[in-house]
Length: 109
Image 1 (cartoon, rainbow, N blue to C red):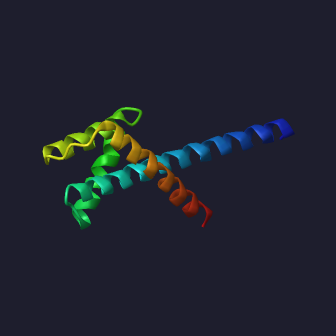
Image 2: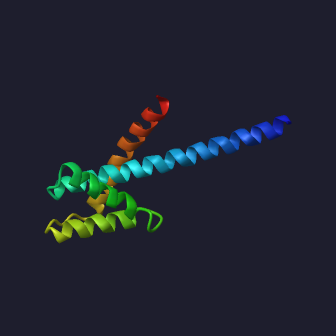
């Protein structure tokens, strides 16, 4: 194998790892948002965990964050809790940093 082929394989492997890491961070972020919203809804324990899973699953519907924000906004509104999209987007950004730290720490172990 030539040096060029070795470099190409290394870049492909790094790209794949980066994509997998980004996916894990996104899923963790959505789970954390789900747990945060569950708390707003008065859910705890297994109910909160189950709700968080529904938030994670909602993100697979459409690329981007709009589907997640729409889902939690709808769920909150059904319970009489109104949170602006901007507030939810800010919380999503905050949780993204936490999710990144958690996932990268787990990968290093």
